[in-house]
Image 1 (tube, rainbow, N blue to C red):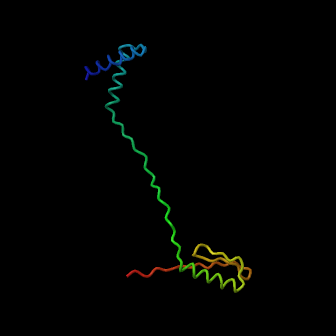
Image 2: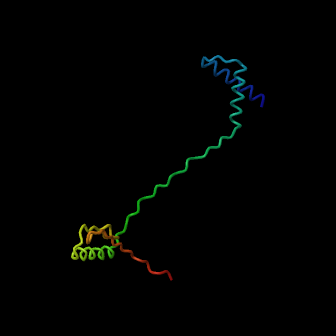
Image 3: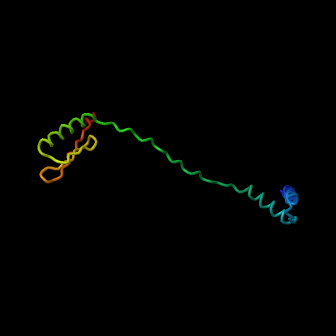
Length: 113
């Protein structure tokens, strides 16, 4: 190792001299030690975790529920309801008799067998 250290120090000394940076043999030897020491040290780095970007799912409209709530809207209007609004195909909001109401329609799945 001493031979390679001396050889590396000579190379560093010659490179610095060619670049116009005068260094002593001792400084070149110290630089060679640091360079060899840096090669022996293992550098472990952890990569950044990649963020998974999910594509937005397309929402399916339940036409059965929509038709039921459309009929409910008509009935509420006939009863004298005001400010009737349909939120997607899930709920109907309205005011009746000075109070606010919301009817929410839930479709239940069949039981598992």
